[in-house]
Length: 258
View 1 (tube, rainbow, N blue to C red):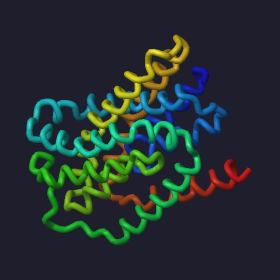
View 2 (cartoon, rainbow, N blue to C red):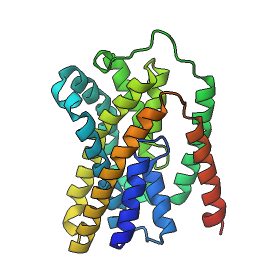
View 3 (cartoon, rainbow, N blue to C red):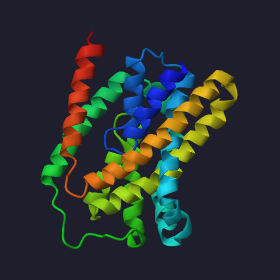
């Protein structure tokens, strides 16, 4: 991997982290398009640069998380399922799922169908919960369960948590913001665990690539978050579902079948 490739992947991460299209899946596909071999460093890179996007959430929402104990409690409860399952399946995920283009393609395709069907079926009730501070702990926990499905690359952490939250009776903007906040401990823990296990083997060039990817993903994610919050005011996620299906089909026939 060179610095230009790291920059491109940083842009991909920043755009896709908070949209329901799977940032990890897009990083894997982008790496294949750029001709970057699937190595242990590349797998770690795809995990670690997500911290750049998460820093954007800290800048925009950190005050809500750090200064409001009620919100902090709910984020902590939602984090528990993924934390437990992530520790249990870390080696399996990194060895067999990360870097696997076919897993990404199928996850994008099936996830796109689910997203479209859900949006056509879902009707927001009048008594939906609009306050992050009053989300029931049981609801927060099950949002965390939904998030754990995103350990499969291509599923999308954002899509899983948003669909879960809507099903559990939260307002669209409320679950989107909760998903932003839940990303902080989730991705920090994932990247921290991976860097702890693999970081000591990185060369100075690889560390420079990480720095570029981190910085670019942070800047682009700031814009991506603002776009999504504006988008959901008048739109559902059907367009993202269609996008997922198109990307999956194109990638399958143009690259994998080729």
